Image (cartoon, rainbow, N blue to C red):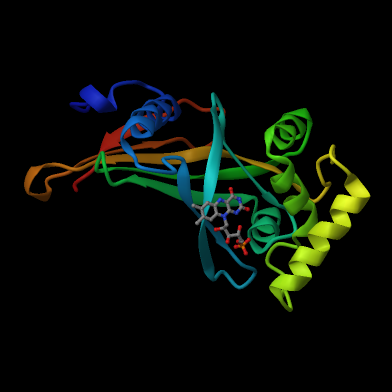
Length: 201
Ligand SMILES: Cc1cc2nc3c(=O)[nH]c(=O)nc-3n(C[C@H](O)[C@H](O)[C@H](O)COP(=O)(O)O)c2cc1C
């Protein structure tokens, strides 16, 4: 038994994280859904960058990217990723580690269709993470895909969602005199129930 309650109440850490994000939407000046997404490359060297979390569902977290990008390739190779969200206004942190799979069906199509036309054409034009000789080259690529795709571009096959299903989550809240509250939820497989422990700060 841990003395868990208040903002940490609930058996499902994904639901608690969703609740916290809802609170951050009211308090953060911008991008409350920004996450620092960590992967490892083929040499085991860590890599991290910001992406936007677009959905929190019962079984996990979804963000969208170019599958050919560095992160896309690293996720494809390892099947694993981690991320952290930090809300400066709330002084809270959510850490997530888990297993990844592509979300490249109708859900990705729908999300792609909801984006602005410029963003959709930009997704077609960008060979994300590859060297680019000049900005003019990128502008020319956008013009080329605009001519080819028109005003209703479909989702590029190389762009879509990644679903991260957590095996471990830690929720952290700032406490007086650095006596912060930390709770870590763990499970060995995504089918198993969560176990939760309080951690020393
Ligand atoms: C606030 C913020 C949000 C971002 N959101 C995304 C995103 O949702 N998807 C994405 O592919 N890149 C996003 N980026 C760009 C990534 O940080 C990164 O530059 C890009 O995806 C290439 O990363 P990679 O070479 O490691 O694959 C975002 C950057 C910032 C600063």
